[in-house]
Length: 238
Image (cartoon, rainbow, N blue to C red; front, side, top):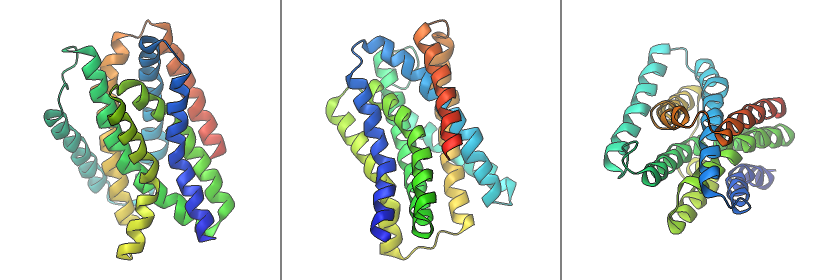
């Protein structure tokens, strides 16, 4: 049972690679990046409002603590924004887009550790429920894999980020085993709230300006519509 639970958890991380493989079949890089911005903007907003925020409210009774953690999550990415090069919008388009891909990967790394742990613990108790939970998560991860693959141009950097995201799904399991951690509602709620703040920062302070700039482009509009469809399918499966 435990081995199967680990495999199911790992599958949710492998879905990032499916997003990468999709980008290999699309040759027009400019259109792909524009599509990816609309797609990931919609997916991240869906993740924020329909998954993470309701989960925070369910796990934590203290709403002030949720707000505080969200603010800390936003502040953490703002600090990273200062220290990671090419964070100014419009200064260098390609570098700025790569910057968005990089900080997105950092936030998703933390999120996937938490999500992977949740899938594992669910699978231990109910393999079928764990599998369908992982399937729902994968519908979020595939478009985010497309985003990172299309925005990060450096091949070594891309391989490292995607590899980290794939294995981040089982890092939570490793930490639980090593330190014998019990993930209660309070700890999980705080971690999810921090991730929520990070994803709000990415969507509102990084991706939104790109969406507004290219809102009339067909590729971006297709990305937004497809993102909405994926969110609906993901929730139906979840």
